Length: 102
Image (tube, one colour):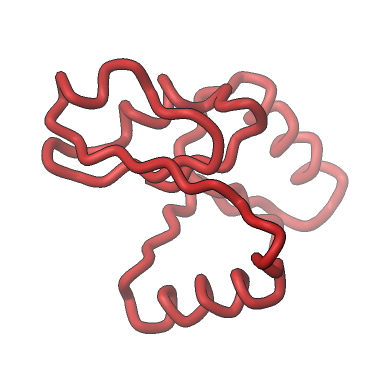
């Protein structure tokens, strides 16, 4: 689990998606009960040397080598109906994974 939520707002919810013995990496704050779930939790701090372009390239390489899996929660049509549906799912805050408009 890679948590990049603003201010660590996704920490508690994100921990629900990590299996026992899994890894939780946060760019903000760690969930309080990671040890109870036997999850290895790590916090990464952004430095001035980090570049978005390099980070995106690194993540893309991990994805291509199947070391990074991105869960797609739902694929919707790329039209007004799909956009409205995506926003409704986001507002419910019950979606685990990415929403794709295609």
